[in-house]
Structures are given as structure tokens and as C-alpha cells.
Length: 470
Ligand code: GDP
Ligand code: MG
Image (cartoon, rainbow, N blue to C red; front, side, top):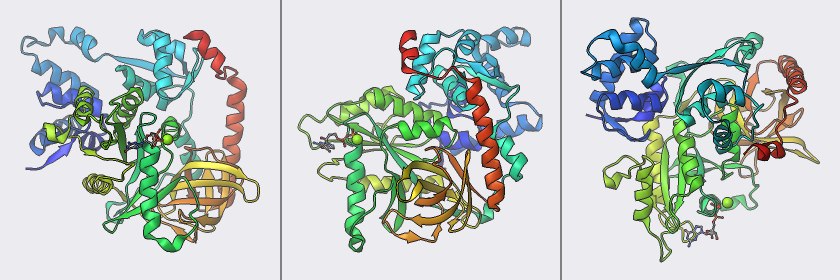
């Protein structure tokens, strides 16, 4: 019988890994993190629970409660149910808009701690800072509370878009094809992220000697055993956080670099939490094993304390000992990436209008607005009409990671694009529309809506405000 990882089943059931782990623990299944694997039989049991309940038109949240009750033998009767539910799985109703202060009060959580949690998520916020839906979800996950968001007077981007450009195209399974996985490298400062990314990039450049001068765009593709892997070149958490804050998920797998002479540090933990909250599979690269004071076992011990139990210790977390500096075991690491990607079955439909995410952007003196995108679905072509938040445009030129002009960018291709009317923000979702006029009109509407919001939110965040409060 096969096995399935927690995050994968969670995705399938439209749950967070955290919710699924609660359900599994109630069923006495031993799981420690989103990377844990469970037997197919167990997965089937959980799936069946959902099919049954959904036919009976009950919500998923109820299942959690039900299982808790049936598990608890002393409970027996339904009499005590209400009070028990409150204790264990109380959900807070949250109405948008809401500020940090209002949220802190309504879930009874210290506001200062909440501000620190938000900082951990990369958001500098003061008490009066309004929280959007995505941030609320991440924050609730961090704090460990369950919330129901009621959107009162705010029309989501998604709804707005649908109104203007019609319903999003949903790909039929038959149209989907495997695409290269998109990888980010995370980890604590000085643990070797940049060195690792450089080594991977260089080995590729060496292979395709013809290239000569390599243009530095923020992502690149490498070939391993005839298969492509796309790497995002910006280590650190900034780009990732910007993308998360916009609800854009660009990464398929994250490599977490942990220095064997330093162990699990604050930004390591932060990265683990990000990956858990986003349900992104983690591969651990235990780096600097060339150092005499390297203690890979200590790293494994510390990872275990954060729910990531290494495979050779009976867990499910893939750990690869490497030396980025001495270029040791780098291929093994990349092979593991391919292995995980294969299990993930990462797919896209190349025969549709492109969708992607801005990973870098700037105003170039000679060339105007330049944005590096990762095409996540569809194929981008010269002449396509672009929409990225409040910015529109038309693809005038595309340049790949080798500095060569290309006419087509299939899924998972990093590509530099010329032709935006303005500089789109990093993390922004980009889509191709059938018509440039339409794209311009939507962008204009969004720009005006943003302008209105700016006027309303004079509670702009400043560092000074922040320091006053913590
Ligand atoms: P980052 O902050 O995570 O991007 O870390 P860097 O890649 O900048 O590396 C920090 C320092 O650690 C640099 O001096 C690197 O040369 C060094 N370093 C990186 N990888 C290794 C390694 O595998 N072994 C040793 N001995 N040093 C390394
Ligand atoms: Mg660095």
C-alpha cells in the first residue's frame, strides 16, 4: 500500500495541514507536521469522512468537532457537546474590515504579541493597521485560533476581476501537463543560501558554454538528468512574504538551508512556519558539512523539535547533507527536488493564456518598466495583453535567463518582460487578457480604487509607530 503526505491530502480536501493534523490526531494517527506521511488506508478513511459529511451537507469544521466527541468515550451523550466544542474548537467570527487592535480584542490575544507575529510574517503593522483576508488567515494560523471571516463591505480582487473579465478559465484534467517545479531557497542569514544558489546557477552556465555573458534575472532554470527545475534567485524572505501577502503562491517546494555548525536559528523556524502555513513541501539541506565543527545530528535533533523528523530517524523529512562551498552532494540535493516534484505531479496547461507572478521589477532608464515573471500556467507570447494589479501593458519583448530573446514562455519559465505601462509590484499576479483595451480599463479602475483606499488609510505604517508600541 502506498502513502501520501499530509499537505497533499490536505490540499485535496481543501483543508489546511493544521486542520488535517488535528483530525488525524483525533483518529490516533501519529503525525507531526505537514511533511508526515500517512498510509493510503488512513487517507481513505479521512476522505470517506468528508464525502459522507458533504453529502449530508455539513461543513468541514463540524467534522472536527464530531470526531472529538466520538473519540471521547466519557462524553457519550450530546448533553455536554456545546460547552466542549467551545473549549476545543471555538471559531471566532471576524468581520472585515478589521484592525490589529480590533482583532486582538475580539479573539482576546495580546495586541503587542500580535504585532510581533505580524512582523514574523514580514508585515510592519501598528494597532490601527487594517488586516486583509490573506493576512488574517496566516495570522490565525500562526496564533493557532480558528476564524470565520465575514466580508461585509469589501469586494475581493477575485470577484472584481470576474465581474470585469468573466469567470476564470478552469483547466480540464486532460489539458494539464507536467511542468518544471519552482523552487525557493530559505534559511537563516549566513547559512549559505546565496552560495548554494550560485553553485547551482554556475553549474548550469558551465554546461551551456555557448551562453557567454549571462544576464542576471531573478530566476533561472537548470537541467538535471534531462529534467528542468526552476529556481527563484532571491534568497531571504522578502519576496516570499510579499507574494504571500498578496495570496500569490509561486513556490512548489522550498529548500531550507541549515548550517551544520550553527543549527536551527530564528529565521530557520520562521521559514518552517511559512512553509507549514502555505503547505509547501520542505527539503532540508544541511550545509557546511565540510567544517570541522559541523554537527549534522544536532541539526536533525533540533528539526525534530519543530515537527520535522528526518527520514533516517524514522520520519518523513528529506535531509541532504551538503557543502555549498565545496560543491559536495549538490546533485543529490537536486535529485531529491526532482523526486519530490514527481510525487507532487505539478501540472499546468500550456495551451491557454498565461498567468504568472512578478518576482522582480524596476524602471530601467533605457528600456522603461521591466518585470521578471514566472509563468505559472499557460504560455506567454509576444503581443499578449497584460494585466498586473493596477498596471497593464503589452508584451513587447521577452528575455530568458540566458539573456536570449524568446517568443514564447511556457509554464514555469522565468522571463523578463518589456512592455508594461508602469512598474508592477513584486508579488503581483499577472494575467493575459484577450484584449489590451480591456486590460487597460481594468487597470485604471484598480488604480482609482487604490487611490481611494490611500485616502482612507492615513494610518500608514511607519517604523516609529511600531517602536512606540512594542
Ligand atoms: P546566506 O546569508 O544564507 O546567503 O549565506 P552565504 O551564502 O552568504 O554564506 C555565508 C558564509 O558562509 C559565506 O562566507 C560562505 O562562503 C560560507 N559558506 C557557505 N556555504 C558554506 C559551506 O558549505 N561550507 C563552508 N565552510 N562555508 C560556507
Ligand atoms: Mg545571502
